[in-house]
Image (cartoon, rainbow, N blue to C red; front, side, top):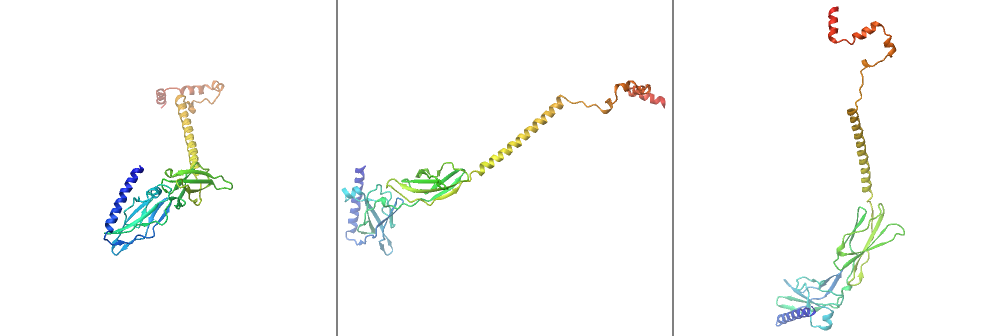
Length: 307
């Protein structure tokens, strides 16, 4: 792998030097780009420079770099950056810097048949000089859990999340989160309590971390929904129980009247006098009682004879 890298670098170096020599032979030379600098924030590295201007034309820029190995053992080898060539005034060299060692950079301008000399970065750049800023963070409440959204700063980053209950003498809990494990769902919290969260970015490759974010506090309101559900469930259970009891009582009534009906005698058949009074009744009354049980045909005949 190292030999392949060296072989590729050597070919590219020869190509640039041959091109530069051919173009500068008998051609006017452009001024070299000035004020090379590397702006690095959260492991994003941008090489910048001042423009080389010509009236009505835009220059093309070539960017090359050397790692520590090339600087020490093959100083004549310069590796073209992945952004080269470019028409812009900056080059993203993040993918070129793969180790925590000093890197040298140089830039050359080309305009038509004219080329400039190489302009070198004044001081080698090491990625451990990057500026680490606190990550953007958003904290929300979901049920009885805290959900943490953190800014995606790239695969080299981890996050230290610290959370605690907002009360005197509260214990801080720490959770290390990888960049691919976002959003973060913290453990179940106590309903009605206030919890605070802060976070910082960690980069193990350079052994550094950012400052903490400002604490964000959220009140847990997850109790209202279960309480309402429990109340509705209790009311529903009571209604169902009442309906079942009414249904059982009604069914019992129906079975009672269907299987064991109660016979109610009419008032004319009820005996209101004692047996002694019936025996001692006068003969006329007995006759009257006897007549009362005659058939309707016989009664009709008696009525005709009397008329």
